[in-house]
Length: 442
Image (tube, rainbow, N blue to C red; front, side, top):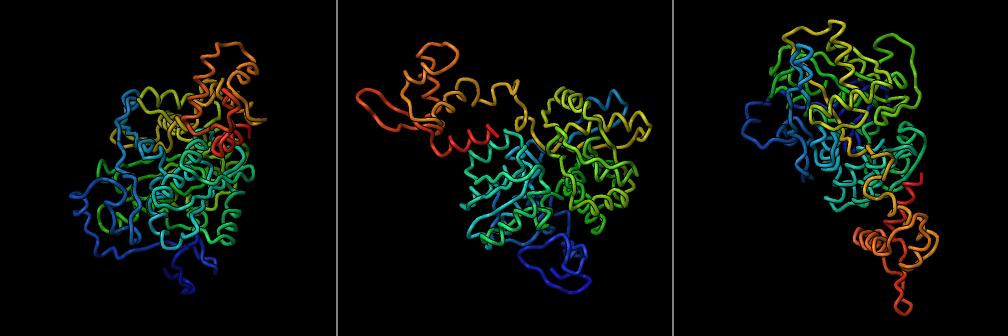
């Protein structure tokens, strides 16, 4: 693409800003787009190929085309409320839309692999899609990241680099690693190609109900901007007559975008909604512009309302992470303030699955918890045989039960036979087991 101000051209990487300072935006020949053709195609991101970057090969796991569910809470509020369930994407989050486009476009430039800076969802997604494309995936994630997402990264074979306290600190580091190692960087703060995939949420919503309001969990601002761009393009091709009102939702602990929209004091503290813990979002300017141009607003949700949001969505049959749960208390707050009209069509965007971040009591950390985790920790010290492992476990249990745990860990590829001494089989951690244990101990 060419910068509209200085004329500088970009091909593989398209940064958010040109070197001259101009905000860059990918555009298309809108005069030749016929949305009537979309209806005959399979649902998903690539249904809208005329408004996506041209690629030689599509790397896909059938992302997009996610359900739009009528919400029961709308009946209680006397409103028409729908849930756009992005947890139903292949790796459980909206980032699959970004990554299918980023990886497909970047394939010719990725002989050494792909890299992304992420708070978890984009990293898990890249791990899956890079595996599908037979490329290495390098993921730069902050020290605090949901363990469920780490398990996905490990399972798909990504190289995990822990760096900094929040994703903000990871972005420049990933950019530098990409330059030094010849990696294709799909981080949206460094390369806006993937955002084209995220905008397809807007196209799907238009085809289904043409909403009047869209409530969006907001961390970096990239998803909000993407959805805005999708609706802008629908406006450009004449499919809609006006933009829906976009509503940005952040927590009271970390609200750099909402605070600017609302004119309130900014906070950049840690929030347990890890996907929204972005202290200095690169896309803040784009996100603020999107909300204001659409005539929307922002809502700040208290940290103690996150559990309520999660529980109310669970009653809808949708299990989400805290970063998505914010949309429900935001909806209730706006409803109580009389913000909506009775005939409005309101969509709540839920971005990531609760299975990525929820633990029964930190509590048996996923299936690799309790006794299995203790066995991994014992084998970290030295190889051991079954009876020796049983003797070193703190709580008493039958040897047969310990043997079963050993067999399950072996089948998961986390431990393997180290050697045999007579009838004794000694076990050791595999590389995969070492990585998993390191991430659990962070």
